[in-house]
Image: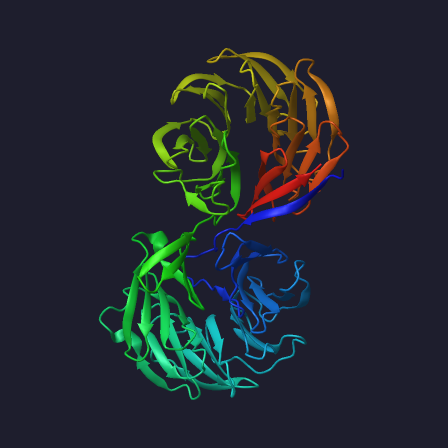
Length: 604
């Protein structure tokens, strides 16, 4: 049989957020999906079954916004360098239609006109802050002028005669006649703070603006005249408003605010109909929203996507995930449930009973990057760049409260069959028994990684001086034995096979050598197909295969029985593939710098 792989799941990253900046969610004209961005990735998620997701990864720098064309056949996405890419939505390959650079700096918003022919792009730039053009040729269809600072959002009327509106950090709302679009009038005396969002109603009769001053204004859609201020009602937002969206029937508006609430406004009575209270801390500030058919979504600063129930005024569902790059992954012993830890200290649990749904580990966690995680019979043990080890109770998904601090930077943690921990820090090897330090061994080299043999008699330490140091282990103390000196780069990962007969050693020189543990002899040296530093290596339960991840973004599954055979998953993650584990002998889960988890089926 051939060595092949197939995509099984993508557990998507959460939206990337910046405090004080609006998050743009893209609506699907067919009502099935919604769009958001994280890093260099555009995430396309099914709105009803959000565990179904796909990603577009062709941008070369951070993507800021993505929008469907009204026809539903194309998506236009823009990035921080002013590039936009227009690409096909109907095929899995997402074929590129065209690519332009309308602005010289960050793109903040993109809008298609109702005919799916013209696009207005706004943001930051040196010569101009906005550009209107034909999507297929790139030729200009007017001038977006009249602003003196970065434009935050734009909107186009859905019926003829076309009109366009932009809003900016210069506290003005500008109105344009089209097509071609040219400046008609400006409202510069209404908002007293940055204007964050503007939006035409679906029927084109009205448009609304909202800003950091907490004010909402309604305007006539064809003339641009001010109709009224909505935000004069008593239960208005107490903070800046970052996003507004209209209901499909143009009778209501949904607004998201920094006061941690989302409000539903009735246009006719000019009053608040429903207030959704999301939470009380900074991460619950609301930065973006979406109203698509009967679905109401709002995005929190912490990256959560909240599904709102307008009938009860409550949150019906919360989508959770990583916002920053994932640095560590660890599978539980008895099931396919696994935990992932990221660069910002967040740890998520991915339960095998609810595919694609993450839950955060509750309690006082880490304040810095998760370095490594290990599984014991009832806990997940974590170490972090905050120089501490903490325990997570698997069943309750909370931190137990026990914490051990280290003198040096902890690099790797492993557990043995007695639930003891061995931690490699930059200057010592620490043995932890029953939540307290049992022994410490100071070392002269810089330790990078550690593993303990399955029979619990030997510990191997991979060092920055290209050597592997072996120690005999009596359950508490470590005694030096011998070394392996065959690797040509600093050791980055080391793993005993499940039966303890082999040990795989990976290094910065992109090689993985497999040694016979008893003989200390080189058994396999064919595992050299990475093109950059190897980040991790893990064995399957049956010991017949190993999976490695690398800075070259690839994930490779190696075979013991056929050392020349491999399954190479190229560009598995953007920028860096940081870790992978076997969920079972034929399935792996990999994580990377793109904050996504990908699950792959393997065929040998």
